[in-house]
Length: 297
Image 1 (cartoon, rainbow, N blue to C red):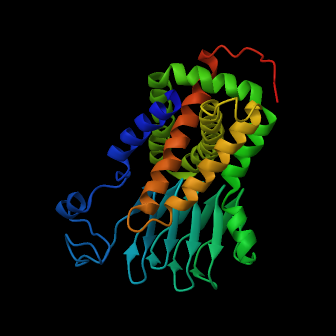
Image 2 (cartoon, rainbow, N blue to C red; image 1 turned 135 degrees about the vertical axis):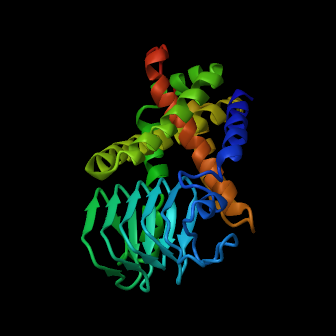
């Protein structure tokens, strides 16, 4: 029950801010004389669609015919099919570049997954650091690569189950602290994105690695907590119960994506909830009393 309460708190809090981004709203940009994408209802693209597209923790796209100055995706899944007058940067994201896309600046991917459909027109440099280019992968392998964060969570669960279980149970007793620290971890991306230049890219790269570790910890910790709710009379091994719960979380995230209209949105909220939980637990490790357990399998 405590695990469900933590997840519910995270879902409610993230639901309130899931639609927010670092960029201003369309109406605010229009009042300042800036432009919006051509499909934007507030100005209908009359000023040419010249603004920056900055998105975090959601799914977005730049459609064919749309124009923006720069694109910055953080912990995101995005598709670029239009024209980018400046740079296109992805940090800890999955970026798909369509064949009809045009990037007049640099294409920079940091600890991301890159898929190029045909060969997009990139006038500047193509810079990749810790990035997997899946453009020529077979479909099945391409799908498996997108699951690297859950796979990392599975490795963490199997290799550190005892300590992970202790930390998860400690976090379940202090949900407010974990939630607060988790949001603080997410907010670190705001100043990092405002630094500009090389310093910003370095900070965002470090935070992308930090965020992936948080997601893996959150996913595996939630599996531990849900597994604790399974009766030992049914399954004796605590690790096996956690693995069953882990499989259920993976199935839930996949099935949510197929629900019409709200499915993809709900799936993103679930993933961001687990990421926030993991970041909170990661930052709370100094405050927790982690006793060495007797591992029972």
